[in-house]
Image (cartoon, rainbow, N blue to C red):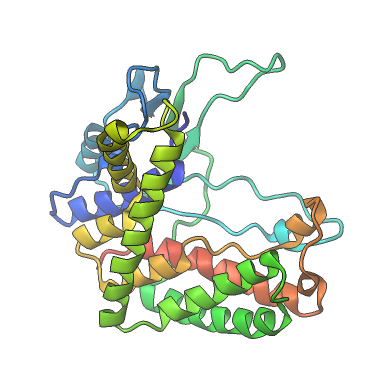
Length: 315
């Protein structure tokens, strides 16, 4: 089982920056990323952070050592891939952006998540899944402000909804999925504080029930009986605690607007030209309608920048 790297990196930034502000914040994902597995005791491949002489499995110890060296901020960044938006003869993809960057007064140090891949024989070598420094990476770790990212995502989402909504076929599930994605993001962005807090309560209740369903359906012993219920409910609660980075943002004291922005931007992945090149299914006709690509690419870019702004916010 490999690390859920996105949730780990986001929470590393949220928790790390809170600690740099003097808060004693913790997150289960950073302390025990395998807390939600069904059966402990199996070899867990994540080794932590690669350091001179081996690995540091503890986020706390690794972070404290970086802080002692003058760490100013820690950031988790996603990136935009222009090749995804070119249908014919796309350019080579950009090198994968490392998941974390440590900001020091005089330099930036990037860390990339690495894990073992199957060899030619199909077998995976002894796993050394970890984060390791990438000294050759020189890209900027700059992120937009929450206000600027929110403003752009709102404009891009409105344009996406106006374009896709009227063209989505009501009897096609794929069309409606991607149309609903845009409308849901727009609703969240337009929430005032009271309405957004109400929405969070509903979303968390839905998540809780979904995690409980998965735990029951995936429990190693099937069929899951009533006697097993306390076990798989406890498992569901652990997994939800691992993944709920929005709650970690709240505990870090970040503004409700930063949390709303993260909530609105999560899971925004509009159909792109890579999907059109590689999908075995017929995609919605609007994907090839003139005007779709610049609108959807702007939406995707704005969503990525919004996620970056939200999880790296300090207020």
